[in-house]
Image (tube, rainbow, N blue to C red):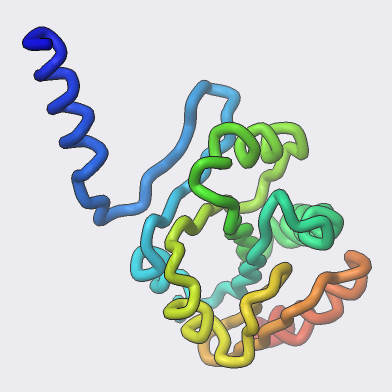
Length: 175
């Protein structure tokens, strides 16, 4: 038992150490870059950036069929606007124990290129109204904003055209 004590102590220290900054999950070179927010406070600054960029933030999970169905539209949005001032962010709400087993393989399989985050803060009742007071917590949900102009959609999108049409008023603010 004496030989295992330092190892056990090390793992206890690592497991109990508070995380103050987002962490990047990347297991192997081909794995996607996935930034993990363990608390909503870490992610919150992304919801109020003031610059010349339009932000499209989609909340989704691999276990949500409507979310998975609409992901290609967000990827197409990313590809369409990647040279413009539009940032598509996909925020996974997958369970922490599913990140390695399910989320990362899903991202690799679908070859997602948008900015990828995972929010593992389980205190949803405290942070959901901070994103949008009208949000019931159902997903998929999307926040689009540019500076003080904001729109929130608690719905799935049926086509790229529908999503693109909702984005257009935000991109016209640049002109």
